[in-house]
Length: 339
Ligand SMILES: [Zn+2]
Ligand SMILES: [Zn+2]
Image (cartoon, rainbow, N blue to C red; front, side, top):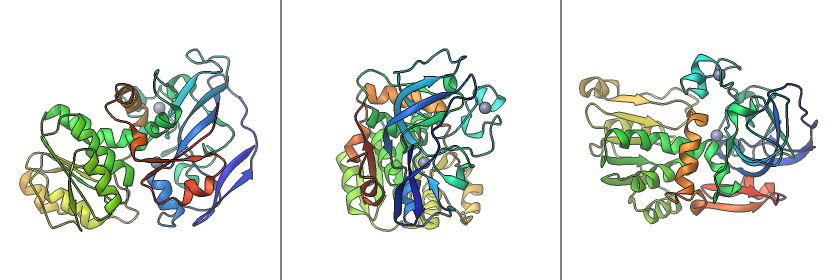
């Protein structure tokens, strides 16, 4: 089958790879119908992330079930489903507690479409077919009224945006929110948008990119242009999507006492953090990969209820134009094909 392969920075191409086949009773084979470009994909494509080449790309995906193993009970061929980017078993202690990102039933950090970063052998979702090892646990049915292109965004970045503001706003309804946008381009905009929709008192979105600022403003956030100042606020809820160590430090310093900053950015080199600020004000820092499988049903319900439409900020491209998917400067890009 064809699989979109990351060859080297700024270069992707279709390459042949073996067809995935069912080899165990809990597995399913999925035909991807929509693949969204993760903010991390954009960093990889432009050579900003350390990825050994070549490998099959794509890990934000929705599609149709093609085949299931003999013990799969919840799904059958033809079902429309969304796929989490992380591989998880559903039965280990971490999975049972909802922490699918740290599943111990598979190797640490197992993910689709990220080559050596995600453990070898899972393949990319931008392909004719993809294997799902624990189908009943991993797959999430797409609710009526939600398209595969919308659902493709849910398996990683939209879930990540939700975890940064949804649970904190549940703890503190009407709280003030600050989002530092940037490298995590779609996550930052969606975090601001979800904060507005979920009843934040005020949402400030700071970025230096005019397109992202306009998209956040259109969602109801207060735009603030420029590099991160030393501090703002304080805000009850702060989100670092900047991907810049200075942005992370500013987000932490802008966090109100006895609250926590959430960083959704990936830092390949350990950034320095304002530890004494945190210590003296009892400010915490949350980071890590989102427990995507746990968050997905909630996020799909938000789309079905029209609280958020992830395609508002997305550029749709044809499945047969993967070069556009890779090279677009839009904050979000989704490749789709017909059923
Ligand atoms: Zn991702
Ligand atoms: Zn597990």
